Image (cartoon, rainbow over all chains, first blue to last red):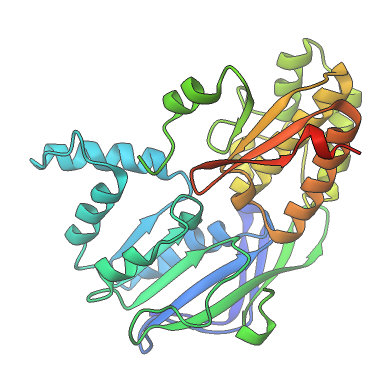
Length: 183
Length: 148
């Protein structure tokens, strides 16, 4: 599955994206780190472009959204109904059970997960055997040149505001070499 | 529990702090409604100041009546902080302890710097102390001792 470089208009989000590079989810094992200003459409890019493309390609994914608490409440209820004894289980264990149940997924998306778990490398440990691509939205100052996970390449993606016509924001989405990533 | 629990956050800090929590920033659904609830009037001057300040954060599409749910998470965090700062000014509140919970990690680097500059100003002018949670620890960003 490839999200090709192209122009994308999100009418309901008042966003125009100029995606300057292809995003290849087929042939590489990559962790994409998405960074950019507030309101530049990182989450919209995930929810309106990447995830629909994953669905069309019938490529399963795991997604931890920004409002992780609501998701965890739902997860707790779901796992309870499946017979797991999770009443005293903390979030870490809860996520572990969920990830282990998601072994048909090939893409793992985390939107600002690092603000709750700054050291989130355990996600790679749990999922690297079956996940090919990770997409991580982050505002952390320092992101790694390497992911630390075996065979997983780090690719930095920057969202830049290039225009505003009073209604729509024009945002360029491009890959950025690590040397240019602000640290 | 690694991820905060709202009840325990309030139990632990509710008596001492004005808490701005990323997932519970607003009671109402727009800036105008929020200001109306807090000021008990349609305070147009305050609303205008919030919108003007927001433009400085590249929040160019802010509108008094726009539903908060149509903003991004980081934009909502910035608007929550701007609303708080402007209310402190408008009401002449002094000596408040403000706790930011999951706010700063939701904001881009450049906007974080701008926001800290605004908090530093209000810290100096209104004796506001600012705290944030870092790795589950409470960290004081501006204390009374370093007030200029």
